[in-house]
Image (cartoon, rainbow, N blue to C red):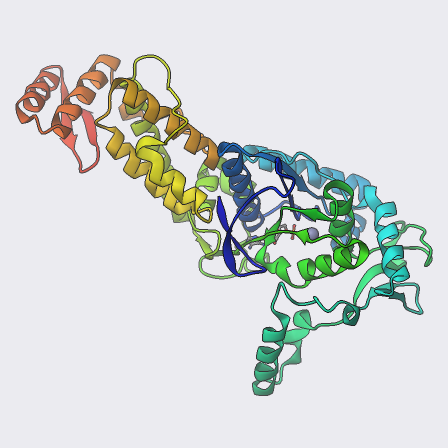
Length: 466
Ligand code: AMP
Ligand code: ZN
């Protein structure tokens, strides 16, 4: 499989560095409320990524953390009158339930920050001992970015600094640039009164880890100094991932992540999602409107991960139609095989282009388009060829994590099995341009009270009296 790498700005072939298992890390959720569909764009695409590797025959080790201590979790647990542990346990459980509804595979390991305080302290100690970090007067410890010449490579800081200079001259609003400011960042935060009971002892006094540190410490624990791929939403490139690289490489050598996979943000109605704009959607909001989690998943994989995805409610209606069309064609294909689907290890038959799309920079919209084209091609297949095509289709659907709706619209449900079979048979004659046979079966269907209306890619059946 080939994938674009944020660090080198090139598409590269993915290979496990240990020769057997592809080991990768995804920055996980901050558990202080329900995850929104923007978060789920990232998590679902990471899931398709893993499923594609596995469908291609690779073993994977998927590690994703839970951020259960930071400013937001501490603030909101106090507002809720709960301990940090109880508060974050509740939101972690909610996250897992949403992931399951969206058919995301659980990661193989899911370490949480609070359970890894000793590993984080040990990493800070190493950084201080090696001269990459220093304690400030208040008991906080900072990473000295001047001590790491590689700082800024991932996010192309040198280029951005030039840009920043230009813009700053043109505009006076310095607030805009605060998040981009390049400065020493905190590894260990000294205890403050507003932290309440949430502090831990350390060689620098009571405090808690800075947010960037947890991923570096848990990666070291579970993946070592060198591993295959690191992933997150594009907002994490700077400063989070830049800081992770600095901490990890300075603390312990190794190449850290061999590949960087970043997912572009989801927008709602063309703009940013936010609580104050009232356009922040969660999975519960969307299911309360009558949409299924699978329809949400379909929308989330409907755009390429390197392009923004503009989410609208209309796109969910479109997903519903696409899924039921897919289900119908898959059932028609299944009806034409004798026995079980038969997997052909060599090729994906009519679905080869769809599979190639996934293999080439995880092109999910290309794969979905390829599935529809493949289904049209497969409409002429019968017997063994149809059995192989159905197996290939099933593998692709598994790679995308799609399950097809079992329910179909009532008008279709009312079609008796033998009528459906007759109509399918007629469609095959029509595709083969055997007009005489096709007309004969149309008449036979009419005689039994069913009208056929042919579309470009499909047909519909309606009761004659309707
Ligand atoms: P958080 O819970 O805020 O730490 O975010 C969890 C994941 O969601 C991270 O990988 C973020 O980069 C990602 N993320 C946050 N907002 C969006 C968005 N609007 N679209 C896509 N991914 C996002
Ligand atoms: Zn992280």
